[in-house]
Length: 346
Image (cartoon, rainbow, N blue to C red):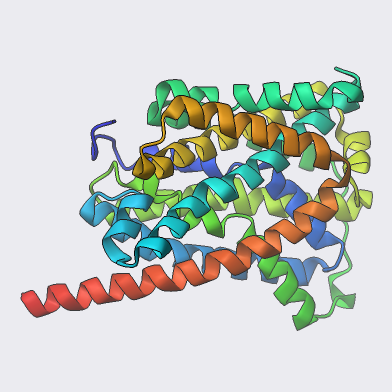
């Protein structure tokens, strides 16, 4: 096991960036565009970022102050054995869901440029799943740090270059606010990464010493890799009337964009696998079994679900929001409890 508290806080910008650099963030923006105007979208994206940042704050401080990863923190604060096991197992279960959706996107991307015939999607999906967990399986945290940097720079530059080519034109005067739509759109933003923000994040913040610096680097990575890509997805969808993966591929199906998206998906899935290994360490599961099991299961699911990605993604993000918010409340209550105990002792 890697020695704890052995990395600089600045490494979190790249390692957490590897976690949150979801191409799904771009498609989250597309989903928001299907129901919200520009003003509603900006409002929901800003509100979602604030809620995600607030959710992250106690998680970072608890993890850094006691050098705890997620499963260790759950074991410290949860005394009921069955509940403790359920909450720890929630991480690999949810991560397999994320993993499957991301691999399904890769299958669609490769199929769009005729890399392989669709009847081989099961084999291809499983092979991709094995590949996309190999980095953290072999090299651990260092892989997330360095590969995350490559993925973040590549994808942000690619999407940024694409966005400046679009002819943005919006009539702001005619736009109104519908708070029901804002609520739904905000849930999509929150769902894009709240679950990992209150679980998997601890698996990397427990390697650093300064919680305040760690928090700043984490939310900076969150803004750049999550919020910015959601915004880009919204704008691209409004201009090009995107409502499906096929339409997206029809306007941006070039090898540079597809390559950058695949690299970002690789970094995110490797990050998910890293947290899955950390969670299952609590049950002493051999990491080779984890590597094989996660890859086969997620690859199989991805081969089944790649035809209905947009519909599946919308439902999944809402689910993540409703699961992540109670966990955020739990960590805030533990953080406040610890603060009170420490103040009493002093």
